[in-house]
Length: 336
Image (cartoon, rainbow, N blue to C red; front, side, top):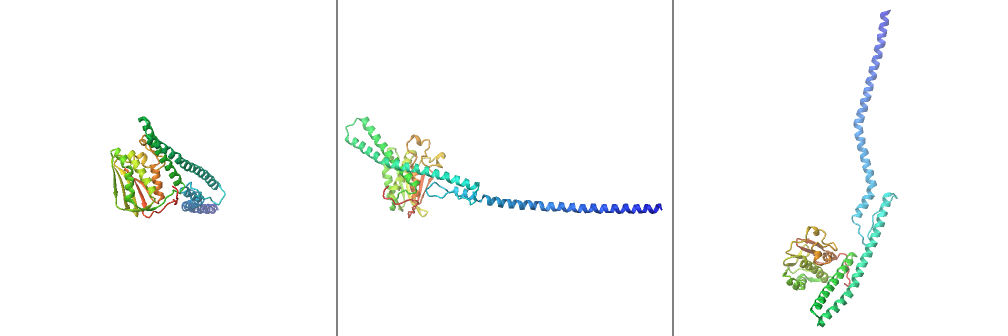
């Protein structure tokens, strides 16, 4: 009896332990499956979530990129398009509207400044011309003491400077409006450069310097008055700030004509070379030698009005003009 009871207890314990072992194996299998699922699924879920987030961010920021791309091209010219606005009435649209309002205010201010410069320079030309005529008449009359004659000569020279400044300001204002007046015609580069040389020969001789030509018989369709003005500014700049002899060159190149004025000086300093064509830019040395800082800005405006460009090359400035005179933003105006 006792032996039978013991066998029964042993059997029950064995069965219970077997069930517990089977249950533990099942749990281990389930846990192993979960670990495998997390190991495989988590990186995949992170990747999918990242791609989805990147796509959503790209869609959300697309209006910002459009505004940024347009802002890189926007100018203050009248009628120029403003920043594009998204369809959604959200914070980005309100930011774009605020920036467009700011651009409109800047454009109006810039237009008022441009009109003032143009009007002032235009009105200055007549009284300066009258004053110069009266001074020259007084010089011709003679009978002045030496110091009076010296003062009259200096006054005439200053009238010339004022007249040139007024003309330069008028050119700058008109070029900013995109309507620099030009009257193009077919001209021989040799004759044009020879005329510029003759104009400055006396001044160069007074300073012990020479002016040389280097030409090849090229021709160009351009406004001779404007080109003489640009080249005159370059020669005047070389006389003021350069050294040694001056060379005025003209040749056919790159489907157009290259006009270049250079000297034997050290050229533009690093502090000014990068912004030489900006308005009122002058080096420290130039501030003691006169000049308004508009000469090179005029040169660039005239080159661009003819569809060309102006660059600094060593100790000189080079203009490239298309041989057939592709006008860029200029108008044919009978009044200069």
